[in-house]
Image (cartoon, rainbow, N blue to C red; front, side, top):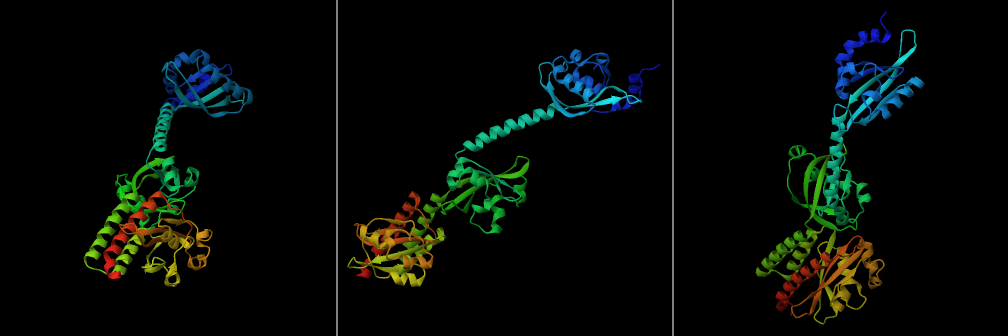
Length: 427
């Protein structure tokens, strides 16, 4: 009479031969009674050589892993599903291979336990690909985090910041954790319609990952509220399984300021050459500064011939009532930003008008108009004489950076040149 395992293997042999998974049957002593060709190739041992032998005889290095698993299935009658197994086999000695296997009890027609059935899938290539990906991601992470360039990774769906390196955190003034909780929208100062052009998610060429190169002219806001001009270089990547955009940020603020100052200087020279009125020249300078920095309001006041009082000369965006209220302000050691700067003949930076003692007697004039900070730089003649002051107002408390100070110095120099050129008309 044919044995039960023999009868069983006859019935399932077509399935054994057709599947790409490794299949095996073992009896209650863990001896192989049936093995298909796929499993034989995985093990590097023929199907016939498996029969009647236990795993420890076929796969001595894997037996300590496999035999406890199948023994537990026999003892409990419960399957062990999707077990990850790694090790060496005679098929690839010295090479680590990987499988996912499921083990289940099988019984005869009368319900008596006859042994263990198993299904094994070789996932070695997948594991190696995952490892290569991890290694690549680690290399990328090191390059990303150590780059001197500020870099962000954005989710293409909602522009959430998925990653930010230390250079980006330094540029924007946020911690890395804070940036990762933000959207790119929180940094930009652009209309929503311009957003697609900024990050490239709507442009077909950029969707295909084509490198558009650096683009200039975007304005971003730092944590302290300062506006910076940036150039962006974008590339399409896959980050943690999602489509994303890698954005390299270049701070071009200083270059833009230099270009704007040069352009302002040229416009000023043109106005002076055309014998323009001083008020027109200074107003053009103030508007040029406000155009470069839309968050500020520029004011220029002139010191009278007695050197005692300041008089309004230009302030195109300041509330007229405020300008009138300070017209004729007497200079002194505690007379706001401009009166003090003219008195000291040196810059006076007031971060917060509401709390600074220099504004104690004047803050009630400024605060109702939403003016919260005021930086003032004296305008000096070539001989060092105070001619007036150039002031920058902000609608929120603001500290001045070294770059801000240099910009104010250069702008005051331009104003000084224009005033000196017009001095014969003023006397």
